[in-house]
Image 1 (tube, rainbow, N blue to C red):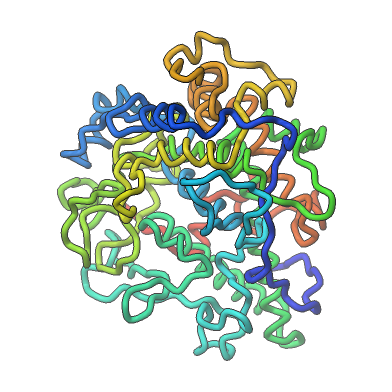
Image 2: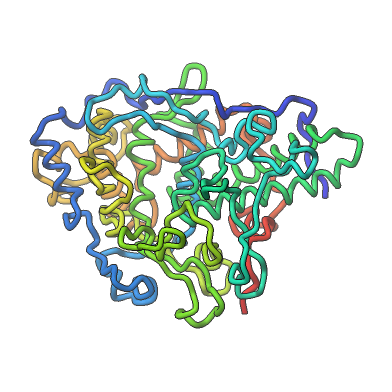
Length: 496
């Protein structure tokens, strides 16, 4: 298989331990509100369990939440996007940003906060600092740990899919802690298995590159070329599949054709809080309350399949809980991807619509300190307050984009939130009003498209900088999609 050879003689670029900073798209815009007790109370009420943003899902039957359309009346499905893209979005977020230091209790300047990720779509969450800096991520039984990423088998006869294929997991230590470039990629079973797919995709590409280049090149040179091929396919998928699903094809085309109007930088790209704290958190609205993780021993009998809530604090078996939390290895804890991406067999399930309704499990997050809000909606709203993010209305004016009508926000009048709406809530409501929740609207879509495309345009190693006309080696004549990555990674079971 031929590969476009690109600078394999250089040292592989390591970004794992470098640090950037957060910043602002619109540094002159005021915060949507001062930090007052009345505003905190209004935001807490808006995002509270059982409040206006809570879908009120009946969590007693995870299977019915997927199979009974009548249970989705208050938590609408998105017919144009499949369930897996929520977790592609989460994976991307962990590849761009990591903020372990900011607080929900005090106002903070985002420019003072370290981003423990280089803002680039370079898969440092997968590769870490490379074989030298992150040797625990590499398989030392092959090439002395210089090229192959470590994956592990799930033991036990039950750890097989319907077709009898063995299941795999990310590497873990003796306490079941995942050994990953970013530990957040083990937050839930789905993103953990997506990380596994990237590990296996790299190893499959590595085998092709090794065969293609032959013995004339060193192990390190072969690794560098495989890493480039993997990164470029990943970036191409983001531009040509993830972004069209997320912001609409017209917005992607406009940014690629006409350039970025709001996301600019002096030296290197950064992560704007209007993106990280607001617009890019649209994915929280897409999370389903429950998922079918796999088909177990039957592709047709739900009783033999593994369904689970995304999080369930009442799941008491800590070794193999009944929900889809991460941090565990057990025979049934693997993903059959036919539920999450469209393989053309009719088994895929949709995302939830992008709107101001969130699935009920997200209002009872696990592992929070006793004095901390457990509602993800409340936490997002308070974070916007602490980071002094501007209102959706002021951002729309700054971008010369249409504003939502007053009637579109008539249900959030407390403390004037209908006139100075937190950008995160505004972006969700804008998608609901202008795009029926199928993708982001003008303001949210433009922010997300400009930042993701801009990060690639600002990265000297990306395909958009080195060869914007490049086309994928893998995939089909239509391009490279998530289903192609999963097939090449060998993580897709053959179902009857």
